[in-house]
Image (spheres, rainbow, N blue to C red):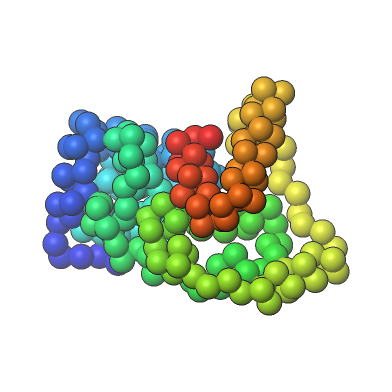
Length: 198
């Protein structure tokens, strides 16, 4: 939604992170989006100029922008810090409670939840558990004809045996921590691990 006020917070965060041009931020946003199969198909200096002029992009795009700046700074950056706090409205209370119909839909949902967690959206981080949601998703999984498969090679990422081994060890470590201390203890560590690129 357009704003009449320039986004000085975003401008300040760009300077702090060392983005010397609008093009450099646009490239970083595209790279961040590609890492999580995110919502940006294109992004250039014109888009950054619009954000600096007060326009807040729709959906989960502000969370990706914050994550790109955070990656450059080496710390978590919230959507509030970049002057786009209104973006948290993109997270709905039912997000993630349905079995996705496609791999892309599932990836988008997980990405939205992950970035909302990074942005400390209270609707996600402090939400109560809905056990009925597990039953609905499980039932739908059992009776559905199957999820449409993603076309191979779409992301261009290559995964080798070392990546698979690292994933297995990391999964086992987080599962052990969850078993010993509970999911609340592990949650922030896992989100930060994912944000750092796993």
